[in-house]
Length: 452
Image (cartoon, rainbow, N blue to C red):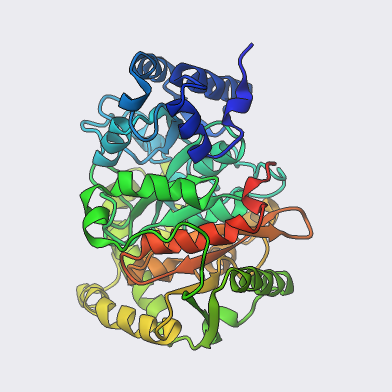
């Protein structure tokens, strides 16, 4: 009998058990494959033979030689290339596309002892904050099938929430790590732009794309991010503040843009989250928001133009095989003037500096809503797809344009039993410090420990 409860804790716990030889890599992978066999809808393809062979190789090593992940099973969003495996990006047009190289971030995880189980479902070309894909059945939130799991890294959120893997990889161009993390009750980080290599990954908008993990806890992400980032994080980022003591930390709560139009449950949840952080010693200040309309416009231009450049050949040559949502979001990118794109790129540093000055006002991090509302039903997002996209991305996509790190943490449940979340945002390269603040919050709460 396979003991699937091996995967019920977080990654840090599992890795420690693997290092102590309480569990072998082969047992951990067998547990993951058993759970996937019971319900594999989160996966595009399970690469079981390779995973079993890798787990067997790691099991034969002394525990101290297995790396920091020590044989923990994970899976990847279908934008990460692994040489010899398909790289579908959520589109039937890429069903036969084979990756020629392995993404460096996967190589780093391999070297650290992670065992990759295969490719996860996602929105078509990574263009849906709910995870909906016109070519597949709509993914279901593990907490309630009437709701979406968040996207575009939908399979990543589902697989971790269901305990099928100890962590999963996602990509985030406007919220696509943070949405499934928030909607599925997980912790996820969109790193500082450029911190984690995007080499070997299928792009959407190359100056906005960020690669990162979805996991159970902030301490899981703090274990994973340095591995994924490699030397860049070790050389440039401040040390982690893992330990839970937030005395001396100042958190900014911006008014204006980030406080307007919030559902009452979101406001109440945000206030409760702030009180927990205060209880940990954090000092909280009120700040202002800059004019976000111009940031919205500029980020929209960059997103549309870069996506049109990447996806233009698919749309022009196979228009009937590209979903309507992709058409609608990419089409404007064919028509913006080159000067508009140049202005949007040129204006980014000044807009980012203004955002940091006004929103953070000297604070160590800002705490923002992830969504302005509770999770909408799948039916409502299908009926009003454009409106849903605009609403859901209101507080997330601008951070990709500004290049700032953002951590999504689970902070409660709404009246329908769906997870709620906030995001912690900081200056560039304060990723680990943000995870430290999140870990402090998680020491006093159990939202990240609950299972669907």
